[in-house]
Image (cartoon, rainbow, N blue to C red; front, side, top):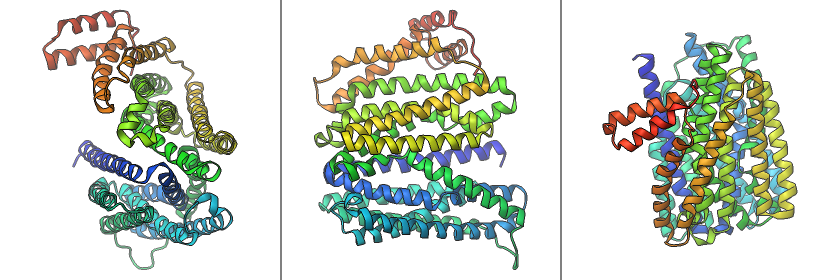
Length: 517
């Protein structure tokens, strides 16, 4: 199989796994949220967040190390060292797990009434111990599969285990199960994910000759990688995750935590599936551009940022106008307070996605220390703001803290990237894009309040896409090369009809400054 064919195959399996796990996971969360209501869902979400935190810290350094060093050993023809390396990383992971469980036990002992109100703390500790152990092993196995570039294995696990999880949640919903039953479903699904991933990855590991020892230089590199990445991943988890759910349960109310959770989940998912489509491809794109020179990378960064804004702007506009019917349709009237939070979180998530052009450039330029400092700063700012603002203002304070940290992180990423390349984006074009989105928001806003949520969203969606697309052409938000490509697509797929659209493309492209991709 050629390199190109292998890359396409990996992309296909990776996309299948990601979208299956995300879409069905979102559907599962909607069933759980609707069934439990804001208060119970807030408590449930806090417990699940503790599992996610435990998994992130348990695998901090080890999961990324297994990807990196398995791939490296395969590429250098030293397959005999793969099994001992994986075994060493598993031992390190067990020590991380021991530390995490000790910290969780201490947390529940000292602040159990705030961390998990309404739950039996000994039972919750047992749940967390089993859940963290199973999920961390599953994610470690995913890392093994990625190291072997076997994305088919991860796709198979996601395509089987995620639907089973959804079916179990639906069954619990139909049986009107309590929150403990849903936590039990989580443990069963965790066992399924772990068992399937173990079965898929175990045959990939090649046998090792007896007495094989890891070289000292490899051991030093593995340990250095774990130390550096463990700090980055641990602090980065607090910076990137919905830690507000945890603090809202601790300092606010459980129903506020439930409202924030659904708002964050929906906003982050929308940003990942729309502008995030480009964001996911930026790291290899920037690495390739840097290999051709700083000027090429600079132009690629500027163009990528523009495209991300083009995709993110209408998403934010639509969410701001129709946040209430979106939440009502997805989660029901009981989650109405989450609507404005969703609109703000969507802006923050879209901004973070746009800044991926900057972070991808910094990573490609080996600025890992800079990124580590930035991640630490964002994490500290977020935690300080959360504790301060949630104590004082509850859900509103959590929203302000989240968007403030996201704004700081996005601006810092972009400013550092701009400073590195010594170029400026086309600010006029970016302002035109924002203007097109703002006009679209004003134009679609009269559709609110006339019909139920679903017809409103369908009508608004059908109007938003052509209106925003037309405005971006009228306001000349595209480069001349973009316009030429659109002309070719218009001619190829519609035979140049309608001709009015062709004339609009001609007019829009005449005075647009040429911009390299």
